[in-house]
Length: 242
Ligand code: NAP
Image 1 (tube, protein in one colour):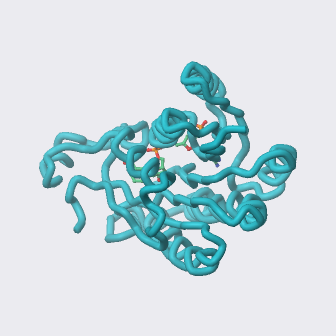
Image 2: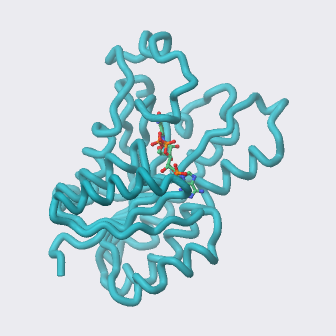
């Protein structure tokens, strides 16, 4: 039995999720690593986590699909309960609202908001029985302020902040802490189409952030040191929105 416990990280085959899974493994957690399609990268990360002496169970499924989520996690939940969930899986489908396709609205809302519901609703009953746990939802600066071209994404990420605050109040008495981490521009595949140099000029710290810098904050929120923090949004954005 691992004294630190298990962390379930969604969307962890690359980017912020990858950095979070590896950093949590360094901090002593075994990892249930969810992702959608990138099996090769997921297996590479699994190997890296095993080299750290931690277990890494791959759980590939679409977080939008409640039945699939339940079917995949049920056999694992029969034996173990994660101490923490990091709801990180995400996509963007940017366009001005006037041209936004219905499918691009639905898909973005589903991955972020229904994904949060599907995972959390599946695991929470087990956490409640243990009377301990941490839930960290990865929001975005786009959920805190306006960004043209991201009405779907902003709506999803703001929604996640609302869900974080309400769930924090619901489960506080059972010693389950729920927080959001809100990254600004972070160097991952999600930004590969964007003009990074131009963007960096408008960031007070003069650069975009690293996935590692987000992972550090998530790991703190999974540690004993954050035991009096719940219902909060912690921004990791280089000062771009204060
Ligand atoms: P990324 O590099 O594009 O990685 C996205 C991850 O999510 C991948 O592992 C992908 O899996 C997974 N995923 C996508 N749809 C999924 C689904 N339906 N079910 C399960 N997994 C799914 O993105 P990132 O930049 O690391 O972003 C991670 C989170 O941070 C997202 O929630 C994003 O909105 C948020 N965020 C990012 C930034 C940024 O600047 N990068 C800023 C603020 C917030 P496969 O690749 O295996 O398909």
